[in-house]
Image 1 (cartoon, rainbow, N blue to C red):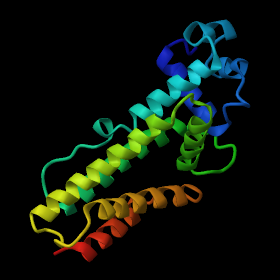
Image 2: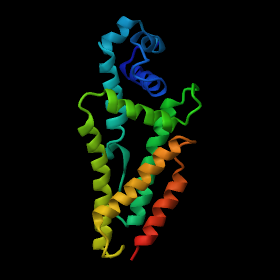
Image 3: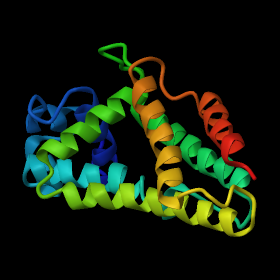
Image 4: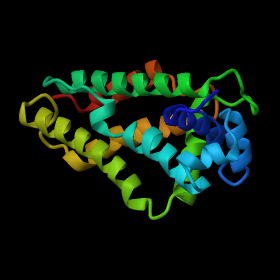
Length: 203
């Protein structure tokens, strides 16, 4: 029987990702968690409380750069590899959480996660700034790495740091979203694409 708050969050993650916020009733969530409705409301009085707790843990905490990446000082090429490693490790953790043997729509588990993200934007109150902060963290990481590479003469001196950073970030984000509709992000192909961009800007 699931009576632990962490286990409730994990079960609720799967429900919200694979179903959606509006369809998932408190009774259904409680049943999946092995609780009565009263047992569920002991932890989370309202469904929105539970949904926000799921989003806080599995979106905002999980996607925070300090929890996702482990960078060491080095070249831009090494930064790319470390960035991809962080993406891959995070993706594997999320897939393990979402893959409970139940795949009602035959989608990749990456897609279910994006489905959750869309719901967070719709139902989490005043969430735009929290989402923007995650994007900005990634922008800053890329800008810092590119600025350092430019200062060190690793990449061309005529490059605009902001535009170059956006090019890398948008390649990653675009591939992640597109491939979620298929079999999920192929990190080897992502590496090829990002290193190809690197080859174009290398000094």
